[in-house]
Amino acid sequence: MSRVMVALVLRDLRLSARRPVEALLPVVFFVLAASLFPLGVGPEPETLRRIAPGVLWVGALLATLLSLNTLWAGDWQDGSLDHLLLCGEPAWALALAKAAAHWLSHGLPLLVAAPLLGLMFGLPAASLAVLLASLLLGTPILSLLGAFGSALTLGLRAGGLLTLLIVLPLTIPALIFGSGAVSSWEAGLSVEGHFSLLGALFIATLLGAPPATAAALRIATA
Image (cartoon, rainbow, N blue to C red; front, side, top):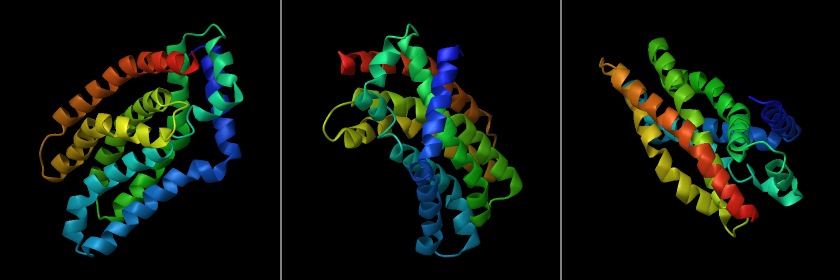
């Protein structure tokens, strides 16, 4: 990472720390959404254990999408986005730094909360480890795709809704492979295929999303 990218990540983390309510909202949503499922489906331990991977992954996905509205909007409104794009750093590097800051401030707290929710659903320690590994690979994908979707709808009316409509279908493969890894482990099957596909998806998103985000930013600021 260059100095500009590191400075951008640190700046976004400081801004997130100054708005703790906004930063903690996705985690609160994640915890509340997951906590409601036992009330709806009943307290049967086997049922809760079976639905836990899907519930926790869907909760993490929706919590991440909840935090995308302000990813680029603040920089665009105060004019700092134009300065960032003119600082000499490649636009894709700025997009990557933004996605990294978003994951550190919003995705990483979800990883901290996930084991507690997994215990609530009755997942054993080995399944919790698989769940954390899948989220560790999958949540950066959500942040990278979220940065792209947020840049693509920058400045548009109802941009938040359009971002959800764009990003949500793109995140379905990560949801399938991530929750599928935990379900396969619970069923006594190999998880190598799920993690291989999830890793390949992460690499493809890491290589493709920042340039696409950079192109969307140039269009939005043209």
